[in-house]
Length: 406
Image (tube, rainbow, N blue to C red; front, side):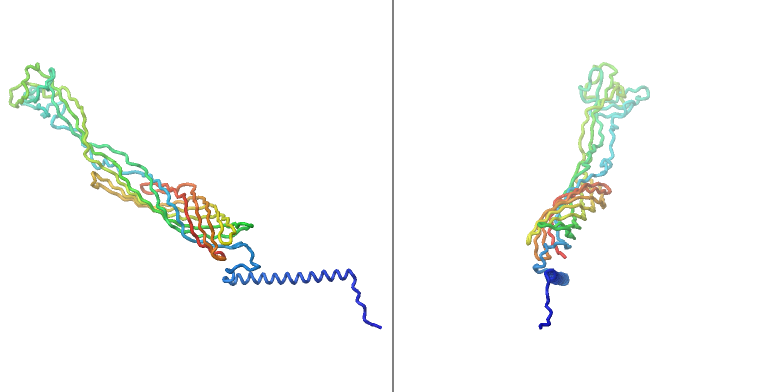
């Protein structure tokens, strides 16, 4: 008799064992794959050389996904415009005091005097101012000086004054295009099938300079000549006057006329420029621009070449040094000069937009070429001792940066 117990497997037990076997196999297999994946990631972190190699079957994640990166390189930026407003320039009339109209040769109009004219003379004899105000000590050159019952004498006065001209109170200059630099640090925030979004913080520096010079007429020194006509009333009819030319003496005797003119008329002004005085201004300005930017980059997932587009806000610290040299010159000869040097700074907010290409040189190294436009919301306003300046630094720039992902 066979004593072996028959082993009977019921259908329900067979199904349960099958499920337990499948569950055990899946658990062991999954754990094995997890161990392999963790090992690969650990080796990548500990071995930069391995991580820079081509991805393995378990490294199928998109390039640079969820990684930090730094970028740095040169920056070419187009120079801006500077509008300069001059606070004040010296009054050039102070270099020459005016000479008031005066002619001592013809004396005052309301008192006896010795008077010398271009076409004759009327002077005092021994009795002028003693017995009366008449004189026989006089003479004239031409019969044309007798008009009706009056005798006319002519002279002129000469004065020196000037005319001031307002020089320009504002001017502009261009800042030269310059090479600077920029460094960035970024973090991949999200990824999709065709692109990656990155938050990027940048710091850039560019130094500009510019200069201009101009010369303006500030003052003209002028000699003014006025024609004077003194009129004497004849004491008798014109037929009694000695014919011209006539010269009486102090001792006399002779024909008497009044020593004091009845009327003096000033007319016929003639002006002659004597000298021109110019302002000459030379302005040098140096501008340092520090820019901090924070923005979002969208980067394509091309294997070798990818596009980049980005935009964001910027903070711009502007520092400016001004050097102004001023000279006053008369007919090319320097009269005076001054120099003003000062610096000032300001901070302005702005925004930027850019686009470019990203070249993958290896798994972690890349080269980016970008074109960017920066817009400052307001011009940078700086003030110096004798000028104010508005600096417009909005404009285009080009960047080439080397990137390292980690």
